[in-house]
Image (cartoon, rainbow, N blue to C red; front, top):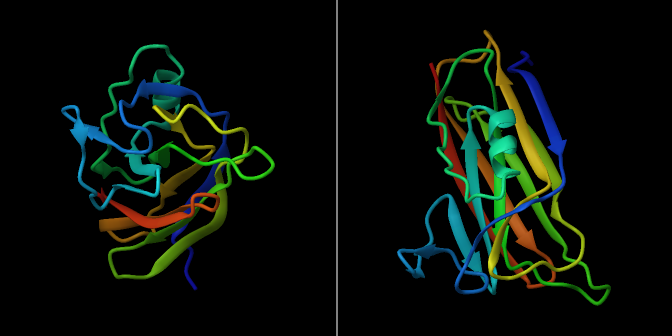
Length: 179
Protein backbone atom coordinates (compact mmCIF):
# COMPACT_ATOMS: atom_id res chain seq x y z
CA UNK A 1 0.00 0.00 0.00
CA UNK A 2 1.47 3.33 -1.01
CA UNK A 3 2.10 5.98 1.56
CA UNK A 4 -0.59 8.58 1.02
CA UNK A 5 -0.24 10.82 4.02
CA UNK A 6 3.15 12.26 4.81
CA UNK A 7 2.06 13.59 8.15
CA UNK A 8 -0.92 12.70 10.25
CA UNK A 9 -0.89 13.71 13.88
CA UNK A 10 -3.37 14.13 16.65
CA UNK A 11 -2.74 17.19 18.74
CA UNK A 12 -4.23 17.30 22.19
CA UNK A 13 -4.62 20.69 23.80
CA UNK A 14 -6.53 22.26 26.63
CA UNK A 15 -9.91 23.57 25.59
CA UNK A 16 -10.61 27.26 25.82
CA UNK A 17 -14.04 28.85 25.62
CA UNK A 18 -15.20 31.34 23.02
CA UNK A 19 -18.61 32.63 22.12
CA UNK A 20 -21.74 32.35 24.23
CA UNK A 21 -24.78 30.48 23.00
CA UNK A 22 -28.21 31.78 23.99
CA UNK A 23 -29.77 28.30 23.94
CA UNK A 24 -27.91 25.45 25.63
CA UNK A 25 -26.77 22.70 23.26
CA UNK A 26 -28.01 24.38 20.07
CA UNK A 27 -26.14 26.35 17.40
CA UNK A 28 -27.58 29.75 16.62
CA UNK A 29 -27.92 31.65 13.37
CA UNK A 30 -29.09 35.26 13.74
CA UNK A 31 -30.41 34.48 17.22
CA UNK A 32 -32.45 31.42 16.19
CA UNK A 33 -31.69 27.72 16.33
CA UNK A 34 -29.62 26.88 13.24
CA UNK A 35 -30.67 23.89 11.12
CA UNK A 36 -28.31 20.92 11.01
CA UNK A 37 -25.82 20.83 8.15
CA UNK A 38 -23.13 18.42 6.99
CA UNK A 39 -20.55 20.15 9.23
CA UNK A 40 -22.72 21.33 12.17
CA UNK A 41 -25.30 19.31 14.11
CA UNK A 42 -26.87 18.93 17.51
CA UNK A 43 -28.86 16.24 19.28
CA UNK A 44 -30.17 15.74 22.78
CA UNK A 45 -28.54 18.93 24.12
CA UNK A 46 -25.10 18.28 22.59
CA UNK A 47 -23.83 20.20 19.56
CA UNK A 48 -20.65 19.90 17.49
CA UNK A 49 -19.07 21.52 14.46
CA UNK A 50 -16.24 20.23 12.26
CA UNK A 51 -13.98 23.02 11.00
CA UNK A 52 -10.91 22.65 8.74
CA UNK A 53 -8.27 25.33 9.29
CA UNK A 54 -5.34 26.06 6.98
CA UNK A 55 -2.98 27.33 9.68
CA UNK A 56 -3.44 25.38 12.94
CA UNK A 57 -1.02 27.49 14.98
CA UNK A 58 -2.67 30.77 13.97
CA UNK A 59 -6.09 29.27 14.73
CA UNK A 60 -5.00 28.17 18.23
CA UNK A 61 -3.51 31.61 18.93
CA UNK A 62 -6.73 33.31 17.80
CA UNK A 63 -8.85 30.87 19.83
CA UNK A 64 -6.90 31.56 23.03
CA UNK A 65 -7.68 35.30 22.93
CA UNK A 66 -10.65 36.67 24.91
CA UNK A 67 -12.34 38.12 21.81
CA UNK A 68 -14.83 36.09 19.79
CA UNK A 69 -12.72 34.42 17.07
CA UNK A 70 -13.25 35.15 13.38
CA UNK A 71 -12.95 31.62 12.00
CA UNK A 72 -12.32 31.28 8.28
CA UNK A 73 -12.46 27.59 7.29
CA UNK A 74 -9.92 26.44 4.72
CA UNK A 75 -11.22 25.34 1.32
CA UNK A 76 -7.90 24.57 -0.37
CA UNK A 77 -4.45 23.45 0.74
CA UNK A 78 -1.12 23.12 -1.01
CA UNK A 79 1.04 20.04 -1.06
CA UNK A 80 3.16 19.93 2.08
CA UNK A 81 1.03 22.52 3.91
CA UNK A 82 0.02 21.58 7.42
CA UNK A 83 -3.71 21.95 8.12
CA UNK A 84 -6.07 20.62 10.76
CA UNK A 85 -9.61 19.49 11.50
CA UNK A 86 -11.01 20.77 14.79
CA UNK A 87 -14.20 20.09 16.72
CA UNK A 88 -16.10 22.91 18.39
CA UNK A 89 -18.72 21.70 20.85
CA UNK A 90 -21.40 22.85 23.24
CA UNK A 91 -23.54 21.14 25.87
CA UNK A 92 -21.75 17.93 26.80
CA UNK A 93 -23.51 16.17 29.67
CA UNK A 94 -21.84 15.00 32.87
CA UNK A 95 -22.03 11.36 33.85
CA UNK A 96 -22.38 9.98 37.37
CA UNK A 97 -18.71 10.86 38.00
CA UNK A 98 -19.39 14.53 37.11
CA UNK A 99 -17.34 14.32 33.88
CA UNK A 100 -18.33 14.55 30.25
CA UNK A 101 -17.60 11.71 27.84
CA UNK A 102 -17.52 13.24 24.35
CA UNK A 103 -15.53 11.44 21.63
CA UNK A 104 -14.76 11.73 17.91
CA UNK A 105 -13.84 9.11 15.32
CA UNK A 106 -11.92 10.80 12.49
CA UNK A 107 -11.62 9.41 8.96
CA UNK A 108 -9.92 10.97 5.91
CA UNK A 109 -11.00 9.86 2.41
CA UNK A 110 -9.03 10.70 -0.75
CA UNK A 111 -10.55 11.79 -4.11
CA UNK A 112 -10.70 8.13 -5.24
CA UNK A 113 -12.84 7.14 -2.23
CA UNK A 114 -10.01 5.39 -0.40
CA UNK A 115 -9.69 5.79 3.38
CA UNK A 116 -6.17 7.12 3.96
CA UNK A 117 -6.34 7.76 7.69
CA UNK A 118 -8.47 6.83 10.69
CA UNK A 119 -8.24 7.99 14.29
CA UNK A 120 -10.99 6.36 16.41
CA UNK A 121 -12.06 7.22 19.95
CA UNK A 122 -10.32 10.57 20.26
CA UNK A 123 -11.36 12.66 23.26
CA UNK A 124 -13.33 15.83 22.61
CA UNK A 125 -13.93 16.45 26.32
CA UNK A 126 -13.63 14.12 29.35
CA UNK A 127 -13.51 16.56 32.25
CA UNK A 128 -16.10 18.41 34.32
CA UNK A 129 -19.27 19.54 32.58
CA UNK A 130 -18.88 23.03 31.09
CA UNK A 131 -21.26 25.98 30.71
CA UNK A 132 -23.94 24.79 28.29
CA UNK A 133 -24.23 28.26 26.72
CA UNK A 134 -20.59 28.47 25.66
CA UNK A 135 -18.78 27.00 22.66
CA UNK A 136 -15.54 25.16 23.42
CA UNK A 137 -12.66 23.79 21.38
CA UNK A 138 -12.38 20.02 21.67
CA UNK A 139 -9.13 18.40 22.78
CA UNK A 140 -8.80 16.17 19.68
CA UNK A 141 -7.33 18.11 16.77
CA UNK A 142 -6.46 16.14 13.65
CA UNK A 143 -3.28 17.55 12.08
CA UNK A 144 -2.69 16.70 8.41
CA UNK A 145 -0.15 17.26 5.66
CA UNK A 146 -0.55 15.75 2.18
CA UNK A 147 2.54 14.67 0.23
CA UNK A 148 3.55 14.43 -3.43
CA UNK A 149 2.09 10.91 -3.47
CA UNK A 150 -1.42 12.17 -2.74
CA UNK A 151 -3.58 12.80 -5.82
CA UNK A 152 -4.95 16.27 -6.51
CA UNK A 153 -8.64 16.68 -5.85
CA UNK A 154 -11.17 16.87 -3.06
CA UNK A 155 -10.55 15.08 0.24
CA UNK A 156 -13.38 14.37 2.69
CA UNK A 157 -12.86 14.54 6.42
CA UNK A 158 -15.49 12.65 8.41
CA UNK A 159 -15.96 13.02 12.13
CA UNK A 160 -18.45 10.85 14.00
CA UNK A 161 -18.95 12.72 17.26
CA UNK A 162 -20.72 11.43 20.32
CA UNK A 163 -21.65 12.43 23.82
CA UNK A 164 -21.94 9.07 25.55
CA UNK A 165 -23.75 10.62 28.54
CA UNK A 166 -26.46 12.49 26.56
CA UNK A 167 -26.66 10.09 24.59
CA UNK A 168 -26.09 11.73 21.20
CA UNK A 169 -24.17 10.68 18.08
CA UNK A 170 -23.95 12.09 14.56
CA UNK A 171 -21.59 12.34 11.59
CA UNK A 172 -20.04 15.60 10.43
CA UNK A 173 -18.16 16.09 7.15
CA UNK A 174 -16.00 18.73 5.56
CA UNK A 175 -14.04 18.77 2.31
CA UNK A 176 -10.68 20.25 1.40
CA UNK A 177 -9.21 20.55 -2.06
CA UNK A 178 -5.55 19.65 -2.68
CA UNK A 179 -4.22 21.84 -5.45
